[in-house]
Length: 314
Ligand code: TUI
Image 1 (cartoon, rainbow, N blue to C red):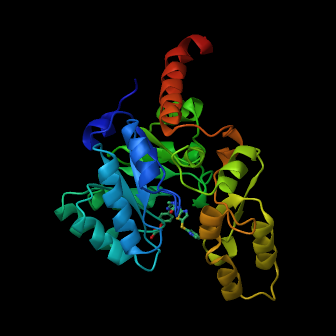
Image 2 (tube, rainbow, N blue to C red; image 1 turned 30 degrees about the vertical axis):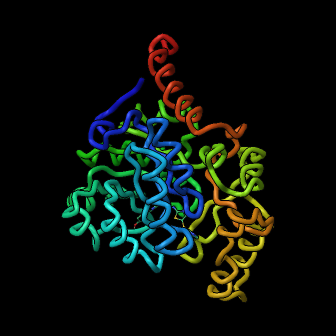
């Protein structure tokens, strides 16, 4: 099976991260992915700092393999979470939606491997200089908060610019995407959307159903006018959100307050008027299945494709 330098650095079997999806990535999903040989990640976006602490403790019970926490840096409790993960002895962190600079010294002193999610070469270079262990280069095909560049152009430019390992994210869902990412210079891949359909993912069944039913054109990016572009499934919610953005008489605060709590309602209640964040590859997710099968399909598929690539192309 495929391995790369990141496997040795983090003590994982396969170069596959599970995205630390807000409200979605909990101990159940993260431990299942870690037990399958990938890197499971718990999201810091949950019902407060103590709820995240509880997920970390639960994950320690459910797996003896490495796992990490994704810290959403724009959250109001980001500082509190940053200290809590040190108290809990978390050894691997990814960060998203901002620069982790304010916390790097504290985390490095605690011996934590810090892997920021970045969407540009400039931030990749900055975090490398600050001592990041690796970077996740996340293209705008991904779900949730997105940058401007897409995976195909972002990953090779980041791989050329930094010496530390690069984990490719955005639009990767199966062995084909993973093989492509490795060829672009990535040392590993991060997959989010497909893991929403994992049996061990605890989201409401309506969320899973929507992912499995999605097509290639089922997602939309809203929030650009607010400076917070977010990719989600097209729903009555995203439709109204986009209409509010296009209407000059609607104030930004009104739009923000309309969006507040919408992701949590989708994840926990399956609310048809919620926000179903998902990446462009939702259309490729055909079924629910155990996390172990998803890991095996992506890694096994990439290995097969890479070994056959030479003969296919002559
Ligand atoms: O963070 C993500 N994806 C997310 S966070 C999230 S939570 C949320 N909830 C409700 C509404 C909106 C969001 C859902 N999805 N991905 C990692 C990521 N980070 N993508 C892009 C970036 C990024 C962008 C700009 C990282 C750094 C950056 O630069 C900031 C700087 O200071 O230079």
